[in-house]
Amino acid sequence: MSIRAARPVIARTAVMAVAIGAATVFGGAGQAFADVEPGTYTSTTWSAGIVLLQRDARVEGGELVLIGRYPIHSTPDGGYVDIFPGHRVVLISDGQGGYNGPAFLGGVVVGSITLTPR
Image (cartoon, rainbow, N blue to C red; front, side, top):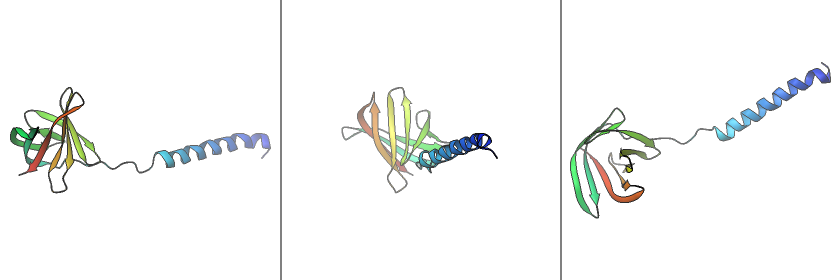
């Protein structure tokens, strides 16, 4: 094979090597995501140390069923739920089957939520 004919092959090989290297570095295993486990819970909403609301809740089909049905977005340690625009609750696994985390309104922490398994 002449040098002229080998150039396209060398160029393609170099491009493939760079692409594979980039995929290895940037497209590795990635971050693991946890799910909020399906089941029945008692949901307790807190603000300033006072219980604002306590009611039955459940997680089914990737949704938190509370007053309505809210999709749960998975995170490395549980998930989060957007209850309505600007109101987000974070569900962090407590390692014992329950979840707790901050409640935000417009990006400001206004309280917390606890999901206790029943």
